[in-house]
Length: 187
Image (cartoon, rainbow, N blue to C red; front, top):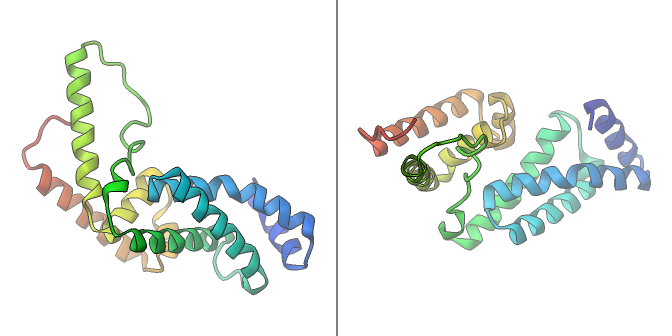
């Protein structure tokens, strides 16, 4: 959906237009689910969080002041709901495949089965290491490389400064390098 269309739907929704609210929900639902799934890695929980975030968003639209872009405001609601779900869950077991798509966005043709097996093992190892990162470092990695958001957008969503996002990404990269050590199996 074009940003102008979204802005108009938000304006009409604030004015009580039920059809605009319905269109807004339909246009935002896939984004809410995709983001929640990328954080929670559980389709059922992601669906619940997406629905809760949409309800919360619609209820909060009258108080939306447009200080941040609607998308950023909406992402923040989703992220806060996801973090609440993660706190309640208190386990990382369900996050094993959080970043499955990160290194597999464009599958490469590997001629030899041995190389394919090695690549798969390397990717799994990297994802396990990323999943072990503290959430304050893992979330910027997810947003930057999985959701492909800008530093400014990540900063707004996490309610931190862009410099903090850069710092957290740098620290995450450093932790990954340190954990991987001399591991040269990454192409």
